[in-house]
Length: 74
Image (cartoon, rainbow, N blue to C red; front, side, top):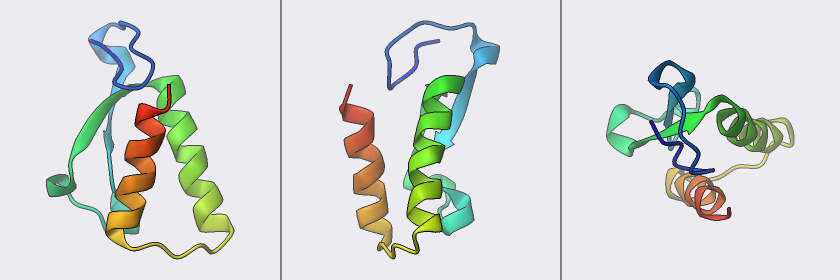
């Protein structure tokens, strides 16, 4: 399978499904999901932890926009 961030090919068991708007912030499956390798998944998790730890408040649409911009910034 191909990681949607870095574009590299990985065995299927090494690709993780990531919610564009994470469930821990109120997201659902309907918000969309992307396939990421472990390293890229950890990268986006780091961005979301930074947002959470610094008490930034974003609307659902802003949060999804940040994730999509990160995804397209290769």
